[in-house]
Length: 177
Image (cartoon, rainbow, N blue to C red; front, side):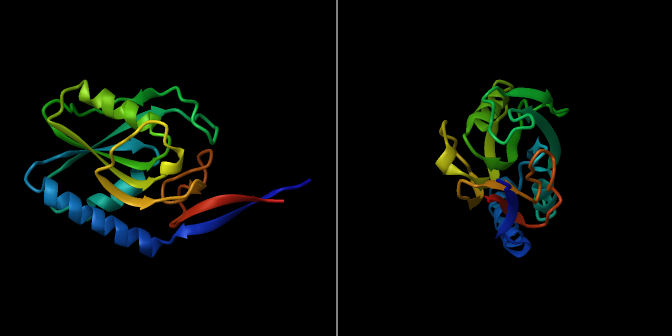
Protein backbone atom coordinates (compact mmCIF):
# COMPACT_ATOMS: atom_id res chain seq x y z
CA UNK A 1 0.00 0.00 0.00
CA UNK A 2 1.41 3.40 -0.98
CA UNK A 3 0.64 6.49 1.01
CA UNK A 4 1.10 10.11 0.04
CA UNK A 5 1.40 13.05 2.40
CA UNK A 6 -0.77 16.04 1.56
CA UNK A 7 -0.47 19.48 3.05
CA UNK A 8 -3.44 21.70 3.83
CA UNK A 9 -3.48 25.37 4.84
CA UNK A 10 -4.73 25.89 8.38
CA UNK A 11 -3.90 29.62 8.68
CA UNK A 12 -2.90 31.66 5.66
CA UNK A 13 -0.34 34.48 5.67
CA UNK A 14 -3.02 37.15 6.08
CA UNK A 15 -4.49 35.46 9.18
CA UNK A 16 -0.98 35.12 10.58
CA UNK A 17 -0.20 38.80 9.96
CA UNK A 18 -3.40 39.93 11.72
CA UNK A 19 -2.59 37.68 14.67
CA UNK A 20 1.02 38.85 14.93
CA UNK A 21 -0.16 42.48 14.95
CA UNK A 22 -2.69 41.69 17.70
CA UNK A 23 -0.03 40.00 19.82
CA UNK A 24 2.36 42.91 19.29
CA UNK A 25 -0.32 45.31 20.48
CA UNK A 26 -0.93 43.26 23.64
CA UNK A 27 2.80 42.94 24.33
CA UNK A 28 3.33 46.67 23.75
CA UNK A 29 0.78 47.53 26.42
CA UNK A 30 2.61 45.40 28.99
CA UNK A 31 6.28 46.02 28.12
CA UNK A 32 6.47 49.55 26.72
CA UNK A 33 8.78 50.98 29.42
CA UNK A 34 10.62 47.83 30.46
CA UNK A 35 13.29 47.06 27.82
CA UNK A 36 12.41 43.36 27.89
CA UNK A 37 14.53 40.50 26.67
CA UNK A 38 12.64 38.55 24.01
CA UNK A 39 13.99 35.04 24.08
CA UNK A 40 13.23 33.06 20.95
CA UNK A 41 13.15 29.28 21.21
CA UNK A 42 15.16 27.84 18.33
CA UNK A 43 14.55 26.90 15.73
CA UNK A 44 10.83 27.11 15.24
CA UNK A 45 10.22 30.60 16.62
CA UNK A 46 12.63 32.59 14.46
CA UNK A 47 10.14 33.54 11.71
CA UNK A 48 7.43 34.46 14.21
CA UNK A 49 9.87 36.41 16.39
CA UNK A 50 11.23 38.34 13.40
CA UNK A 51 7.74 39.41 12.35
CA UNK A 52 6.67 40.14 15.93
CA UNK A 53 9.53 42.51 16.77
CA UNK A 54 8.89 44.55 13.62
CA UNK A 55 5.61 45.61 15.25
CA UNK A 56 7.08 46.51 18.64
CA UNK A 57 8.08 50.16 18.87
CA UNK A 58 9.95 50.27 22.17
CA UNK A 59 13.45 49.32 23.34
CA UNK A 60 13.99 45.58 23.61
CA UNK A 61 16.71 43.00 23.26
CA UNK A 62 16.56 39.68 21.44
CA UNK A 63 18.39 36.46 22.17
CA UNK A 64 17.83 32.78 21.52
CA UNK A 65 17.85 29.52 23.40
CA UNK A 66 18.05 26.12 21.78
CA UNK A 67 16.28 23.15 23.27
CA UNK A 68 15.99 19.64 21.97
CA UNK A 69 13.30 17.06 22.64
CA UNK A 70 12.39 15.78 19.20
CA UNK A 71 15.51 14.82 17.27
CA UNK A 72 14.28 13.75 13.84
CA UNK A 73 10.99 12.36 15.10
CA UNK A 74 7.52 13.87 15.07
CA UNK A 75 6.82 12.91 18.69
CA UNK A 76 8.66 14.43 21.64
CA UNK A 77 11.13 12.09 23.30
CA UNK A 78 10.28 13.68 26.66
CA UNK A 79 13.99 14.22 27.37
CA UNK A 80 14.76 17.90 27.08
CA UNK A 81 18.20 19.42 26.94
CA UNK A 82 19.60 22.90 26.37
CA UNK A 83 21.64 22.83 23.16
CA UNK A 84 22.25 26.61 22.92
CA UNK A 85 22.43 28.88 25.94
CA UNK A 86 21.29 32.50 25.63
CA UNK A 87 24.22 34.90 25.43
CA UNK A 88 22.32 37.58 27.38
CA UNK A 89 21.86 37.12 31.11
CA UNK A 90 18.22 36.92 32.20
CA UNK A 91 19.09 37.92 35.79
CA UNK A 92 17.10 40.99 36.79
CA UNK A 93 15.35 41.16 33.39
CA UNK A 94 11.76 41.00 32.24
CA UNK A 95 11.87 38.05 29.88
CA UNK A 96 9.32 37.24 27.21
CA UNK A 97 9.79 33.74 25.83
CA UNK A 98 8.68 33.54 22.20
CA UNK A 99 7.72 30.01 21.19
CA UNK A 100 6.34 28.60 17.95
CA UNK A 101 4.02 25.99 19.48
CA UNK A 102 3.13 24.62 22.90
CA UNK A 103 2.28 20.96 22.52
CA UNK A 104 2.68 18.54 25.45
CA UNK A 105 4.00 21.36 27.62
CA UNK A 106 7.08 19.34 28.60
CA UNK A 107 9.62 21.49 26.76
CA UNK A 108 7.94 24.76 27.70
CA UNK A 109 7.65 23.84 31.38
CA UNK A 110 11.31 22.77 31.36
CA UNK A 111 12.33 26.10 29.80
CA UNK A 112 10.29 28.27 32.18
CA UNK A 113 11.71 26.42 35.20
CA UNK A 114 15.24 26.71 33.76
CA UNK A 115 14.86 30.47 33.25
CA UNK A 116 13.40 31.10 36.72
CA UNK A 117 16.49 29.48 38.28
CA UNK A 118 18.49 32.33 36.69
CA UNK A 119 16.54 34.99 38.65
CA UNK A 120 14.72 37.15 36.09
CA UNK A 121 12.31 39.83 37.36
CA UNK A 122 9.54 38.16 35.37
CA UNK A 123 9.03 35.49 32.74
CA UNK A 124 6.05 35.45 30.42
CA UNK A 125 5.26 33.26 27.43
CA UNK A 126 4.14 34.25 23.95
CA UNK A 127 3.21 31.32 21.72
CA UNK A 128 2.16 31.44 18.11
CA UNK A 129 0.16 28.23 18.52
CA UNK A 130 -1.23 26.09 21.32
CA UNK A 131 -2.23 22.45 20.92
CA UNK A 132 -4.10 21.84 24.21
CA UNK A 133 -5.35 18.39 23.19
CA UNK A 134 -1.78 17.06 23.63
CA UNK A 135 -1.01 18.78 26.94
CA UNK A 136 0.67 16.63 29.59
CA UNK A 137 1.89 19.45 31.85
CA UNK A 138 -0.13 22.63 32.43
CA UNK A 139 1.48 25.73 30.91
CA UNK A 140 0.22 29.30 31.19
CA UNK A 141 0.44 31.14 27.86
CA UNK A 142 0.32 34.89 28.43
CA UNK A 143 0.05 35.87 24.75
CA UNK A 144 -1.50 33.33 22.39
CA UNK A 145 -1.86 33.46 18.64
CA UNK A 146 -3.87 30.38 17.65
CA UNK A 147 -5.37 27.33 19.29
CA UNK A 148 -4.78 24.46 16.88
CA UNK A 149 -6.12 20.93 16.38
CA UNK A 150 -4.06 17.81 17.03
CA UNK A 151 -2.40 17.81 13.62
CA UNK A 152 1.26 17.95 12.64
CA UNK A 153 1.91 21.58 11.66
CA UNK A 154 4.47 22.96 9.24
CA UNK A 155 5.27 26.35 7.75
CA UNK A 156 5.99 29.80 9.16
CA UNK A 157 8.97 28.38 11.05
CA UNK A 158 7.37 25.06 11.98
CA UNK A 159 9.05 22.04 10.44
CA UNK A 160 8.93 18.36 9.65
CA UNK A 161 12.48 17.05 10.05
CA UNK A 162 13.89 20.53 9.25
CA UNK A 163 11.78 20.91 6.08
CA UNK A 164 8.92 23.34 5.27
CA UNK A 165 9.95 26.15 7.69
CA UNK A 166 9.94 28.55 4.73
CA UNK A 167 6.24 28.12 3.86
CA UNK A 168 4.43 31.45 4.38
CA UNK A 169 1.26 29.75 5.70
CA UNK A 170 0.72 27.41 8.65
CA UNK A 171 -0.26 24.06 7.19
CA UNK A 172 -0.89 20.56 8.45
CA UNK A 173 0.21 17.28 7.00
CA UNK A 174 -2.21 14.45 6.34
CA UNK A 175 -1.45 10.95 5.13
CA UNK A 176 -3.56 9.83 2.20
CA UNK A 177 -3.69 6.17 1.23
